[in-house]
Amino acid sequence: MRDLVALAGFVAAVDVWRDRERSRIERWQQAAFYRLLSATACARAEALEPDITLTWRIVASLHENAPAEDGWAAYAVVAATKWNRLDEELERLTPPQREAARSLARYRLTELENALPSRQRPLPLPRTADISVLRQRYRHLEKLLEETVPQLDRLLFTLPGAR
Image (cartoon, rainbow, N blue to C red):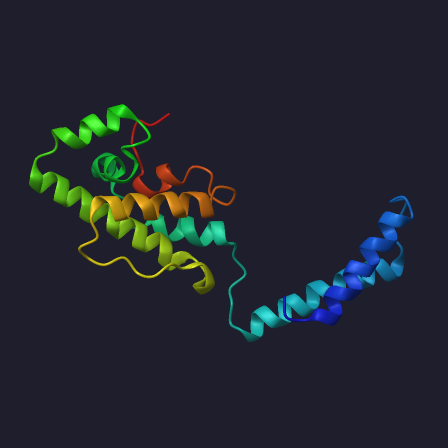
């Protein structure tokens, strides 16, 4: 929000509407709302910011190069502590398969982070980030986006056959 005057006018309109028992919206309250919308749209246009939501940005970025079947192994890398079955699946992987899964998990987490606004992005993951670092980052992102992207795991790793 860049235009604090428009925001203050809208907040005042909402307060008056609420204090008047939410009976009806007056013309000046509508005008305050439209001024806020207009100011926000102008600010976004000046910043060359597209009119898409964070959820849409995340979905669009993770849709490309989705891992399909390989997603289960990458999911096992970051979320094995959630389900015993995943921990067992991770143990069954050969060292090269485990490394490929670790690399894929790191790649997908990095793709997700790049879709976030700069103020929400954590420091970049090193290429050699081990499984414990990836798990910690995954839990952080899952918590950060729990309301925005409730089924983040399915979007990150595609998880064919998941219910």
